[in-house]
Image (cartoon, rainbow, N blue to C red; front, top):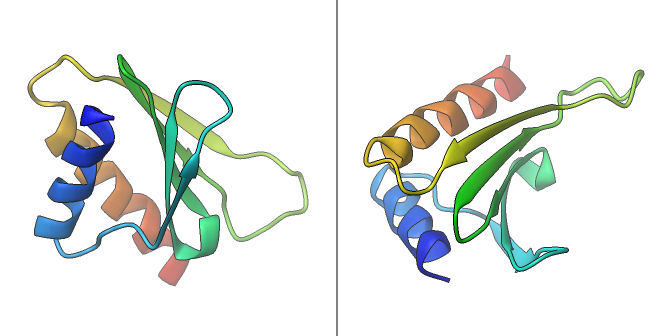
Length: 90
């Protein structure tokens, strides 16, 4: 999938390539960081960023969606992934 390859290349260039990848539930690819606590599900038309916080008490997690056809999307998504990962280290 083109969008998954673009995201892998962009995160590799930024110094944090995904640690794992898998086929998604739909026609998608899932990319993972931080033992699965940060995930991007990549579709042909969008990216979905899932961030699972350290506490599993409430079972909730955050999801942000990004349109794949917007030229600024990869840059914004890279920053959001960095931000999500940095909170795991605090």
